[in-house]
Image (cartoon, rainbow, N blue to C red; front, top):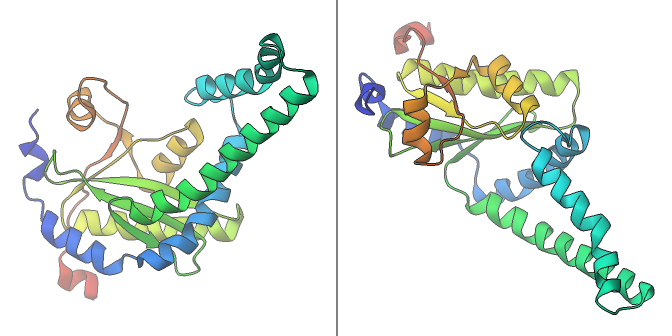
Length: 223
């Protein structure tokens, strides 16, 4: 299967143009990023040992628990080791709090937000595979029934436009729970290995894919 298959019949330029028109401003991205940060931390804390998070979580715990004993073994007193460990933790938190909004504001793609500002996602053109756009940073907060409807709203908007312009959507889920959310909200399925390889290169990562449904004519959609 070649990359050209996904470009057949796809009006990528029109889709990207319309999505860009619906995208929020960079200033709004800065506001949104803190809601996304809280949602991401909540998701990580809720299930830190999911299959795709397990290694990072174990490494984090190992560093957290082993930091002070290692410093003591190097000759520091327990008090100095604890103080230095506290400084390291605070420094990491400071770097995270600075880098997160910078990355959110200047990351590629178009950010869309629900009408009540409680759910959002980012759509990124994958130029290496014409006709394919990646959905990233799909999140909502707080986790209530109302925001579940908001997530449906923004997912339905992107999915509907993808169908109308015959473009293919892909997503790389960072956790099992996010993977289930992508499948439930968008109708994603597991992507074939050749597409995953085109999107990631030699180190293949498991993407999800949503091929366009039956296209809807603009006149019919307006009616």
